[in-house]
Image (cartoon, rainbow, N blue to C red; front, side, top):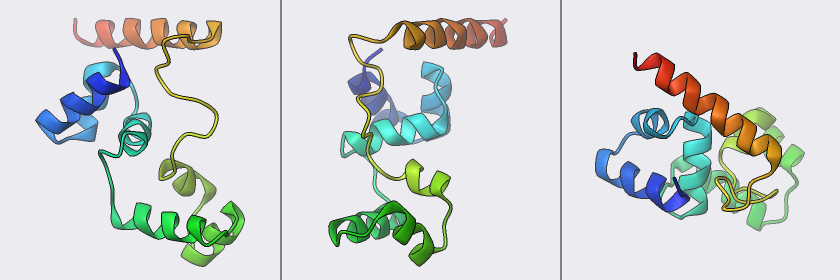
Length: 108
């Protein structure tokens, strides 16, 4: 599974929830992949992006929009690296295996 697979599936079904379920990822991860790919936008995303472009810090943006840091983090592109990288860390591999097993167990 690649980020492109996630984007293409989302474009086909139009649902982050279904896309996340299909690939064994959370809706939040799905949203971040779509934001990174330029395949998703929303009024909240546009508000946050505008304030980032003006140079406001995360804390200032959260205060101005009266949102939590969790909400802020859900609407900004990844800064630590690309999700679903072709060169995942050992921990990322472990998490992927766990999620795949959980997904398969849920389909039985």
